[in-house]
Length: 231
Image 1 (cartoon, rainbow, N blue to C red):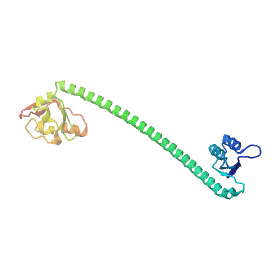
Image 2: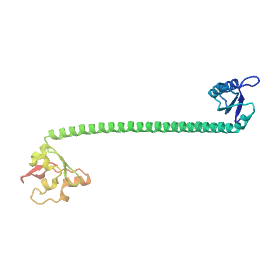
Image 3: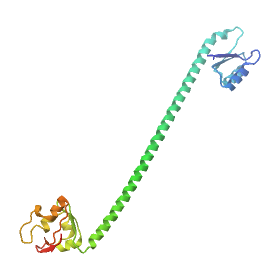
Image 4: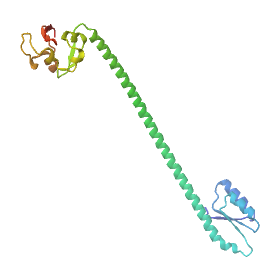
């Protein structure tokens, strides 16, 4: 491997251009200087087209040799710049390839996450639709039942009440929702004595979960009149 190749247009055997063509075909042309005679500038241009870095015109006194160190330095500098450019382009291509890979990986991850999100949303919508349908069925059952039915939470506040129960109690459904049912309908025993919360079987069942049956419990209507209920 040579740092610089100097070829003369006229050499024994193959000429300088033939040497350059052969090396160019092999892809192994080093930094090259073409030496030509006076009036052979066209040969120098052809050599530059083949990949030569520079050329020198010979003179009979040999003074062209004093220019050779400068020309060699210039050709080597040009080759250095070309090599730096090649390395920079390779580094840029590698960076672009790595960036493209990261973008593709990130895009794939986002697409997968988006797919999972859509699946979760679809599943939630199906669950909400099923729950809404179940609620409608329960509402139809409660609303069509002839018996009075209501429900309370652990605090004794009404969570639902069907129209039959509201009619029996003399209240509108909206008036009963969220209200403490004990204070509205079973605050007094059948003999007129106050019924405290801790003595109410309905309240006790909500707290301990034990089913209780009271065949003749008394409820009180909105207008203050009592009626017997089976609890």
